[in-house]
Length: 213
Ligand SMILES: [Mg+2]
Image 1 (cartoon, rainbow, N blue to C red):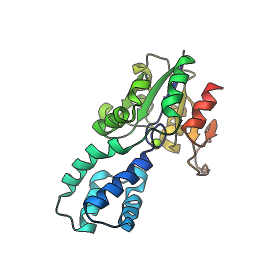
Image 2: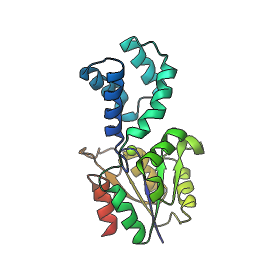
Image 3: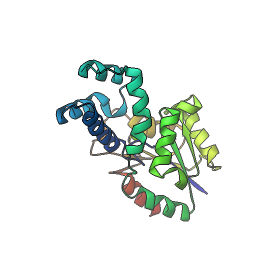
Image 4: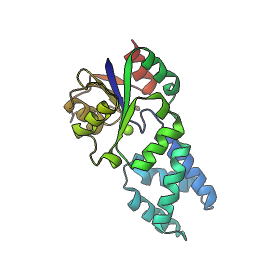
């Protein structure tokens, strides 16, 4: 039995597109401009900006009535519903399973929000298990989170694979857990700082094709 673990945000799902949709909706509701949506996208730092800090700066910049905590609460409910699965994922995961793979998701983030994303995108029903850092209390690149995901899939980590767009979290973390690694480059060049991944592909569809070879 072969195991493959996938990162979630900007790997199996297009979190960046979901954020753009959220920003447009937020701007329409608050009578802001397209330029303000660009500012939101930049301040988001591809999801890496801490959410409480992000929403405090959003509130201050646009002098909004709601508190940062209130803005964060509506974002946590709304954003997952706007995130689409990445192209080819909903068709490709069943093919991978039919070819004998066990499939897991290993993701860093808020427990409730990542679970909503798994459910809203339809990915939850197509995988064997998942491990979310906010729920488990340990995050990538700690090998423990990969081990938990493998246990949920009832498959051994040994000779397994990790696919993701994060150099430190997914590639270095996956390697430390003993996994073969596939990096989703999203148009970026690999930085010389980290040991290179075993394979580089453009997107999830490319990773699925590679595993199905
Ligand atoms: Mg990612």
